[in-house]
Length: 154
Image (cartoon, rainbow, N blue to C red; front, side):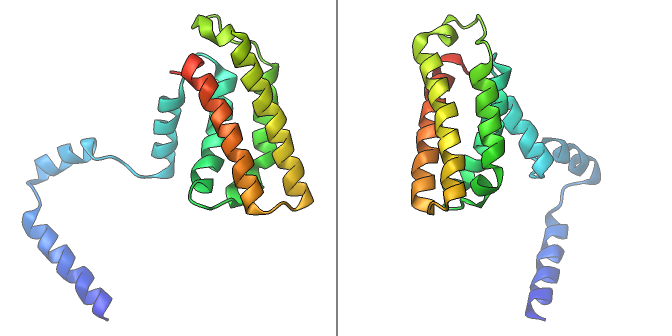
């Protein structure tokens, strides 16, 4: 009951400070949408680099890394095989010619390490590893990814 009264009071006070209808319609165009689809679109825009396989891996990494950084390893446990498949596809792909740094030996080494380490994460999950080991392994994958992203990203 108290919650309903609070909601009514908040709505009533909001009505008194709303802008005119025409302005309200304009303001909705600039207000960020927090829907999952919009957030995914924004993430895609932020992640776009010249290497499409790196971008595909980054999408899955982001979906597992960000929750893991808040001690939620469920997305990693659920999507580990998808992360591994994206890493393997990335490792098997050809680096773009531009920027030139994408073709360096250090980049290829880091991409191979990402693929190897994601295979290790899948094996750890299968073996029932605890969250601490998984989090540490995912951090290593993320760190290796960031090395490549710095040279080949955006």
